[in-house]
Image 1: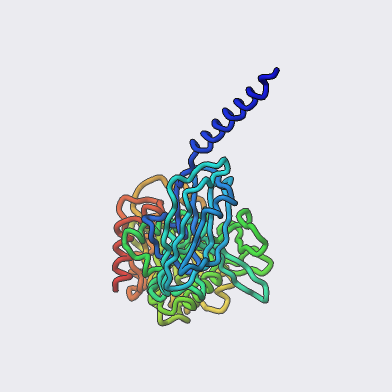
Image 2: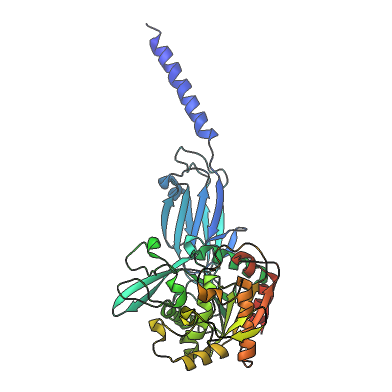
Length: 446
């Protein structure tokens, strides 16, 4: 027993040695760094005045040790910032408040920042550079790109979610923005997918620096997260109907308001393109004719691209026999004149405009039909209601019949058509197609 203290000392030494070895073995690595939703390439990046920087590690970090290792300075001063932790503390998000025309050094030292004391072996060293007009564009449908638009009716405020590549705020200078695209999702309301697809086209065309992209979401009741969220019954949003809130607000009124706000924050805006695919195409078709904002902003050139819609507004009672290319008056289908296929049973948004004035707007506004002629399966094509069936035998043919009608009944119209060969009912393929890219390139270069 007299040797017990010696054994105890040996055990303590061995335990301490093993424990020290464990501390040195573990390491933690950076998986990704992005700023405002864009992955970081290199150590220098141009940012806006309120960027959001996210660092994802391959393990959990200790809040106390991470913040001890973090340093953000400019001229020996530290800017204001907030830190949030998520994904079991493996993701760190910093919301920064920066000054214009400055370069900030951001460092995370290679300390033991892991919750299990893992070592960050390679320090993080970044330079964030601001200017009065330089703002990095959001390029993916991530949280930093998700924003809220507020509309107030009778002292009640409502919100609509949207993705955009730039924020519409007074503290951001967007004087380089000359063009804007408003992108309308389809029936499943996946504005995140459409935002991502269009951003890839932006990158291909190198137009992000001069073009604003806004992709709103017209939610249904199942998608709301707060009482103020605007939401519609099923697909009523695509026809300009009122929302299901306590004060119904037309989706057309909401779009007018978003465009008006855009012009307010971007006085340099010269061109606006509104485009939608499938159900978004129907929205674009009838909103293009109905909206009041184009008449108010007469210094801006508006255009509308209707991509692969299966529903079309006709400014008369005749329809097209696609087999004979003749016009005829349908029988035994009273609903074919109902809105949005005709000018009966209208939404409240149209209460102050008569059919003649509406049709004049429809004929003269610049509407472009983007038609995919692929013969892939189209299970969502409405073949059960007589009104849609009268429009044509397929989604592509309905677009062709609409254009044929306009060319023959109103030859002085301002409508155009482009065919995308081999593509069917596919929004991603349509907006990444060469035909669409060429259209955008020509539109924004003139």
